Amino acid sequence: MTYSSIVVGTDGSPTAERAVEQAAVLASADGARLVVVSAYREGEGPAHDIDSDGLPEDIRFVLTDQVQAEELAHRGREVAKAAGAGKVVVQALPGEPAEVLLEAASDFGADLIVVGSRGLARHGHFILGSVASTVAHHAPCDVLVAHTA
Image (cartoon, rainbow, N blue to C red; front, side, top):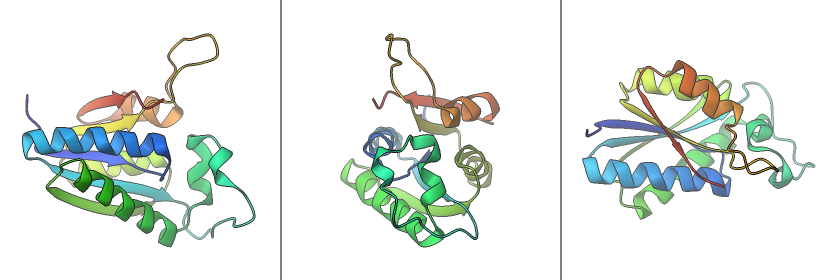
């Protein structure tokens, strides 16, 4: 199966960048358009006094405003281009990350959404983050959960 439109989300974290890279490789192989999306909370500014690097990925976006989200999406484009994607579109959208990914998939007629996993729990069992789980349950298309831990 080949894909023509792939959506991937980024929050700028190393694991999100790995998901973008994997989506870019698929987009490159299929000649697909890659849509890199970043979510933000509308009307809320960044919390400059908090170090977001240590926060779980599922809540890191809360600290992102529109300008930061646009910068993260553009950084995602750079990562995607470096990984071989040819046609890359970026969007920064207000809302919860899973809802934003689903909205972008609908808007762009995506036939694949790539989301990153959260990796392994303490006891070695695979767990999905809430974003990956929500997208997997509600996606209008195929979903690839990229192992990013």
